[in-house]
Structure formats: structure tokens, C-alpha cells
Length: 426
RNA sequence: GGAGAGGUGGCAGAGUGGUCGAAUGCGCUCGACUUGAAAUCGAGUGUCCCAAAAGGACCGUGGGUUCGAAUCCCACCCUCUCCGCCA
Image 1: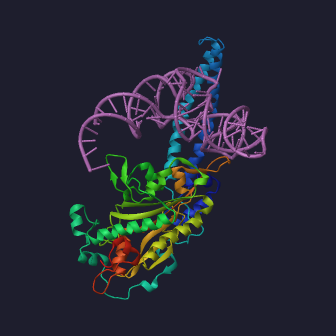
Image 2 (image 1 turned 180 degrees about the vertical axis):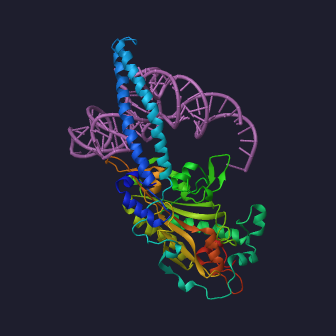
Image 3 (image 1 turned 90 degrees about the vertical axis):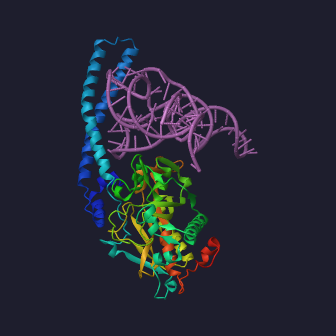
């Protein structure tokens, strides 16, 4: 959530940043509601002050022996009743305005950082660096991962339709083992890098989805359990953001690093024709996520190191990739700056997203009321949150099935995974 | 799913109509004493809105009664315990 004070004090500046995203965000209704709300508040709190005063006076009179039907007491009561009548008119108005303002604020995205390249769409994202060109396979006959996977009997899409529907996969034998090995490998790397593993609930409530920014705008993207206030998590980012929701943390406890393996569930509404085959776009997939709660002044540096940690996984697996900076038009709702990692997929002849690392600054912290307190100092501050995939497991598997494909159709096991799988070849 | 208990500040826990944003204890901060520490004693110590003062809001949430509600009434949510079912 944006800071209403910032909007109030620098409306043009904030509007200019929003315009960089596109999407036609207009601050005027917010400014108008804010103005109304503050005017109503002034009137209301003055009345309330007088009402409190009267309450006190009546109490004093009665304590000091006045009868409840004493003329003076009756007059005060009468005034109290009048104020109450006025308040019962003002209060609902103010409440209504406040709710409208809040609801509107929740639909506004975070402001892009000055470091984020300006652009309208993903076409204007900027490549920052590439790694692992030497590992790009030269064999021209590489089968798509879903074909080789089905041939080896380790992936099955057709039968998954029977169990669920399209965009689901069942892993069998070495496929299941590889997925599990990847998860274990990634978590081991992250915990060694200082991330504390969490295994959170994956059914999560509306408040949690609102806190991280998925709601109210992107309800269509998540699966909902209709009878309960529970949704299937679209990413571990959501439960982890709410891990410390409504808490005031000690400054000493920061930074807090967490990593988590969870299945992720996405409805993929509006992507009907895209990536219909294979592991790239499924309703259910596994992901290992990294998450940081940090002091505000460190968050940009933390984003760099978060990205490097994610890159470390790809490097350890010797998978060729590139890092791109998302432009303002392609930036996620909660983020001010995002690096995507894209892995090389030989069958498609292009790089595909496998991780997304974002600095959400105080945007989620505001929604989730995540604050910290400096020992000895007065007041509290919102902390900053960052999240990054480390990595999307299914897409990693796809990349391995293609980049490690041998001319005879076998899949070599990446050196780093051999201890986890106990075999050299799939 | 059935029955019961309960939701108050960082924690424990009092408060059942007025001067209560809230006793007390613990914790924490500062100070005194001490060579230092412990113990002891003294002072302080919630969050939010408002530029700030003044003022206002907050005792699970939302309504109601009243001049006045943490306290009374209604509805809802959540947590805990027991029983049932279950991995």
C-alpha cells in the first residue's frame, strides 16, 4: 500500500511514477476522499471532545452529591444527547469515506524505483548479464522436455487430466525423485546461506493475500475454497509475508531471511493459448522461495544479494541463464524493482523465466503492518520485504531435461545433484 | 461435528458503569548505591490519526443501551480444553 501522507504531500511526483507503469492509475479520487475524510475527522473529533467533557462533568456532579434530576445535570445530559445526534450523522459518513479510501488505496501498485528501466511492456526489459553460454548445448536435435520426459516415463500429462484437468502433471520414478532432489538441493543451499527454512500453511486466508498484494485486484489468479475464508497459496511469498503480520519486531532481529518449499497454485486465467504443453505453465507447481525482512536503507543491496543467491542455484547446476531488469511497464504490483532470471530452453531456442527477485520496499509491510522498533528510539518504522524464487522447481526440471539431454536420449544428472539422486543418468 | 472456558499493554494478570489508556508483577530504559556485577532503591516505559500542541481513536470484530462502556445487551470471529472422527 502506498503511503497516504506521501500522496498528500507530493501528488504530482507520485502520479508521475504511477504513469510509468501504465494502467491509467489516477490519484485524484484518492486525494478527494482524503480531503473529505480529514474534514469530517476534524468536526467529529471536536464534537467528541465536547462529549467527553460533558461525560466527565456529569460524573463529577453526581459524585459530589448532585441528584441525577438536578437541573444542571439535566442540561448537560440534553447537550450530550444533541451531540450524540450530530455524531450519529457524522460518524457513518466518515467511516464510509475511510473505507472507500482504504479500498481504493489497496488497488494502487507500488511506485517503480528510479533504478527501474522505463518501458511499456516486457519488450523493453533490459538484459543485465548472461552466464553459462559455454553450457548451451550444440546438439540441434534436442527434444522438448515434455517429449523426452514422457518417452522416459517420468512425466505424464495425459493421465493427469484424468486425475485433475489439463495443466497438471504427474511425476513418476526418476522424475519424482529428481523433483524431490531439486527441492532438497535448493533448500540446502539456502539454509547454508543463512535462510531459515519454514514450511507454512498453503491454505491461507484473505487477510494474508491482501497483505502481500494478491488481493483485492488479482482474485481471479488464485483458487478459492468456497466454503471457507481460505485460498490455495499462489506462492510462499504470501504466507511468509504474513508470518510476522501485525507485529513490531526488535531492530536487532533484522534482517530475517527465510526460505520455503511449497506447492503453488495458480488459475492462469487469461493465458489459455500459452505454454499449453509441458512443465512451464501449470496450475500446480513446486517452488522454493526466498524471503527477506530488512531495514529500509539496506533493501536495494539486499535485492542484489538475493538475486545472486538465486543465480547460485543455476550456476551450481550449470544451466545457462541471463538476468534481466523488468521495465516499469512489466513490473509486478508490489515491486519497485525486479530482476528476472531466465534459463535457456534449447527446444524453444530462448530464455524462459525461472526466478523473479523483487524489492517490495514498505509496500507489503504497510499492508501487513510489519514494523520494527529501534531500542531506545521512539516510535516504529515499516521494514522492507523482498522475495525471490530460488527456484521454480518444475521449470528447473524442464531446463535439465533439455540442457542435459544426451544424443542417445538419456539425461545426464548435473554434478551437483548426483549426491541427491545417487545416479549419473536418468 | 457436540459440550465448556476464554479473548485486556512485550508477557503474566487485575479491573464488572464515571476522574481507566487502564492496578500490580515481570521485562525493558535511565539514574543512585557498588571496584564491577548481582541484589536493592528511585524515575520512566503501548499503538495509531494530526506538521505539532491541543484533541481524537484503540481493552477480539461489528452493532446497541447510556450524558458517560474494557465493564451492560445482541450478533459474529478467533483461541483453548474435553468428547467424537481422523493422517
